[in-house]
Length: 131
Image (cartoon, rainbow, N blue to C red; front, side, top):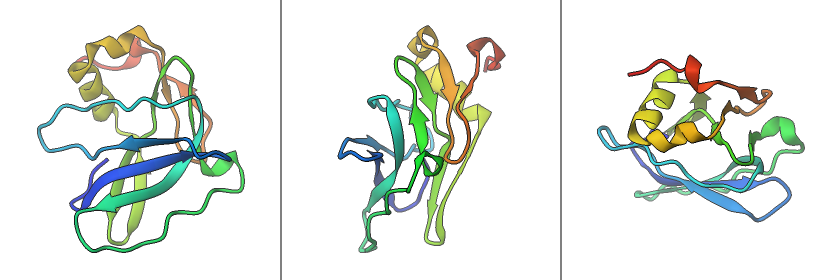
């Protein structure tokens, strides 16, 4: 997650109050994975260090508006970018490479890519280039 003003992001499980939190990455800091229960999640809210007021995001009507966290696996949910104009997400292979370099133990678990509005895809670690 990147942003000049977001300090914490909350994702909520569909039809539940289960949350997990993400912290925006710093320019040179290591990527720290978040742990979440398996299920479908959506962007619920974010905190800022400024007086930016907003309402929490509405729960999607179905799983098409959410991403799926796989059980017992590493699930990459894309890079989320927060601006004053809105929120975008994209897949960046260099983020997966950096996460593996910062946390070599991740390779002990299968890797999945899950984006809002798309099917979950398994990505074998062998297909992720070494840094």
